[in-house]
Length: 582
Ligand code: DGT
Ligand code: CA
Ligand code: CA
Ligand code: ZN
Image (cartoon, rainbow, N blue to C red; front, top):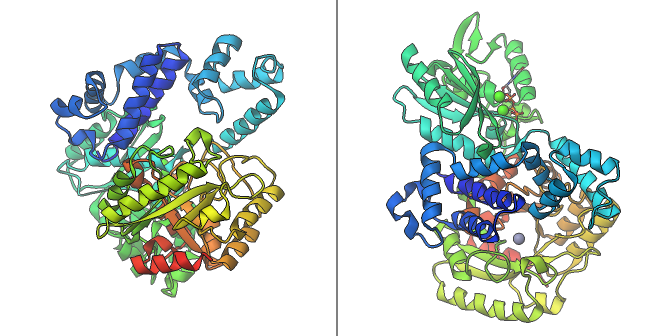
C-alpha cells in the first residue's frame, strides 16, 4: 500500500484536532500531531516495516505503533473512532472551513452550540456569532465567503485522497487469481483536481464463483463502511471517514471487453458522446463492450484496438474532455505528453530553516533519490512569520549553509540556493534586489492578502513579474482546492507579462494547490507558448510523491517536455535560469 503513510498521517492529525476540540490534554494533542508529522516524513511505508520494529522508528512510540498496526489490520483506529463519536458529525465539516481551527471550532460548539454548517449559517444570520469575542464583521464576512466556496465544491474530494484510496484498493485486490487486469477509470484517470467517485475496472474470465469472490473481497475491504449496491457485474461502496466517505464503483468485465469498458468508464461523458457519433458516422457502433460493425464486435480488448479501428491515434485520458482531441487524433497531431519520469529537477522546496521538516542535506538527497540532477532550496521569506520565514540576516547565513551542502554533494546533485520570496500585497517582494541578486534562483509567490479584488491582484502579480530576479512565479493564484478561491487576476495580462520576461509559471503539485490549475496552464502553454515549472513545494520526503499530480495537471494542459523547465538537462536548466536574471 504505497500511500498508507499519508492516510495514517491524516488520521493522526484529525485525532489531534478532535482531542483539542473535546478539551483533551495538550500533551495528547501534541503527541498525535507529532505522530502525524513523523508519518508524513517517513521515507519507508509503515506497511513495509516489521511491526515489531515500528516502535524503534524515531518519533514513533509504543502507542502510535500499536495504532498503526491496528489500522493496517482493520482499516480503523479505535481511539480515533471514540474521538469521532464524541463530536457531532456535522462539526467535522465546520472544521474544514478555512480559518476555523480546532480552538475556534471548540468555542463555536461550546459557547454557541454550533454543531453543523447549517448551525453556523443560522448563528451568523441571527447575529449571535458577532456577539462572540473575537468575531468581528470582517472575520464573519470571510467565513461566509469560505462557506459559499466550500458549498460550490459539493462532495468532491481532492485527487490526492481519491488516488490514495484507489491505489490501496487496487493493491489489495490485484493478486486475486481471477483478476487479469485492474485499473482506475473515471475522472481520476483523467487527472481532474477533484473526484466525485472512484471508478475501478477489472478484467476477469473467471467463473461466476470467482467473480463473486472479487466482489466479496471488495465490499469487505477494511476501507469500506457501507455497501450501496452489490450485483453480478458491479458493486458500489461508501468508505469510512478515513477516506472521507467517498463512493467507489467496481465493475468486472470480460477481458475481450476491457478496452471498450475502460474507454467508456474513463469518460468524459462529452468525449464519449463524440466517440459514439464518430463510430456511427463510420458505419459502426460503440458501447461499453465493444466497437461493432454489422452487429459483430471488431475491437474491444484494448483501448488502442478501439481507437485504431476508428482511424484514431490513442488519446491520453487527460485529454479526453472534448476540447478538440479527436481532430488531433485523426490527423496524428496529438502532443507527446510529458511523463512523470521526464521530471529531473525540483525548483521549490523547504527545509527546517523555515517550515520544512527536513534538513538541507536530507532534502537534496531526497531529490537525488528521485533521480533529479538539480534541487533548489527555497525557504520562506521574512513576511511569512508563521512559517518561520528568514530575516535578511538569517537568509545570508542560510545561503552559506546551502552552498556548503552543495559543495559536499557535488557530483551527486546540484543544489541551488534560492528563496520563495513573498509577493507582498502591493506586488513588491519581501527582500531587496541586492539580496535577491545573491541567490541562484528566486521563486516569488503570493501567500497573504488573497482576498484582494481582481484589479489589485493583477497589478500585484504584474509588479512581481517585472522584478528582474524572479525566475518562477510560485502557485500564482494562491487558491486551495475546495477551500479557498485565491486571487482572480486577469490571467491574460499575467501570461503576456510572464512571456515577455521569459520566466516560468508554476504548477504547484500539491493536491491542495494545483496552482496554476489545468485550464490556466493550458492557455499558458497552448496560446502563449509559456514555460511551466512543476514543483512539489516539498516540506518533507513524502511531498515528493505529489509530483504525479502536477504532471497530470500539465498533461491536461497538453504540455510536452518542451513546455516544462524541470525536464531540461542540468546545463540547459542552469543556462535558462541565468537567462531570466540580469
Ligand atoms: P466524477 O466521478 O464526477 O468525478 O466524474 P466521472 O467522469 O468519473 O463520472 P462518473 O463516475 O459519473 O462516470 C464515469 C464515466 O462513465 C464517465 O466519465 C463517463 C461514463 N459515463 C457515465 N454515465 C454516462 C452516460 O450517461 N453517458 C455516457 N456517454 N457516459 C457515461
Ligand atoms: Ca467517477
Ligand atoms: Ca462512478
Ligand atoms: Zn513553498
